Length: 149
Image 1 (cartoon, one colour):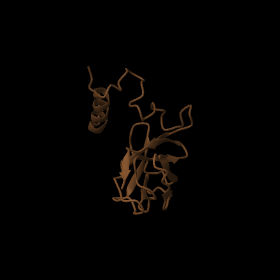
Image 2 (cartoon, helix red, strand yellow):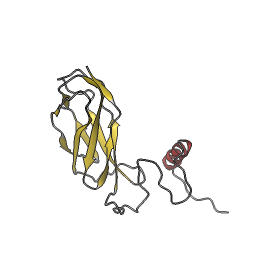
Image 3 (cartoon, rainbow, N blue to C red):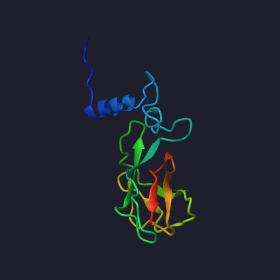
Image 4 (cartoon, rainbow, N blue to C red):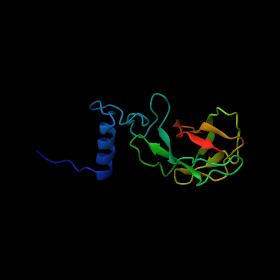
């Protein structure tokens, strides 16, 4: 039997997702947030990949910029950064139990597939805030919850 070449990063990703219960056999999506491989072309939902938070928002004091800066990356269906993506990524408040508003630069042009948000500010203290990142051609993603003091 001839061995097929395997990239270590792919094996690690698949193994991690299988441990998380995301494996369902050949042809199944490779993870809950990454759509099934579509050969780099849009799937039936019109997406070519997903967005992911490279740097999640941290707890922050109301009225000050979230630090370190929030970073969102565009991933293809295999989980690789789409370095050719230079489209606009937008972030909005996903949940805001305390009624705060998001300000700062909320729409950013990606550079080599990564969007940097260094001026995001939330106006009011509260727990359970999330950010949602979106871009044309990619599935949106919500951040992990964070607190504004």
